Length: 58
Ligand SMILES: [Zn+2]
Image (cartoon, rainbow, N blue to C red; front, top):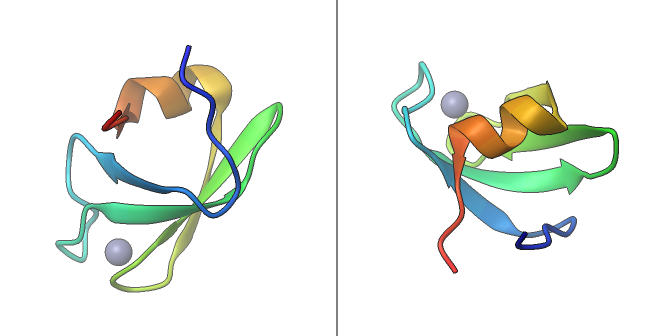
């Protein structure tokens, strides 16, 4: 599994409501928090959900 670190940029399979699909990881662990680069909204996901919605480009 690819490791994700705070500060990494990830993209989501579906764009956010604002139209952006690039996110910065702001917290990792049992829960993940990602911040939308376009609108600044922070979304919290559990790790299962995180790996489902995020596309890891590595
Ligand atoms: Zn957004």
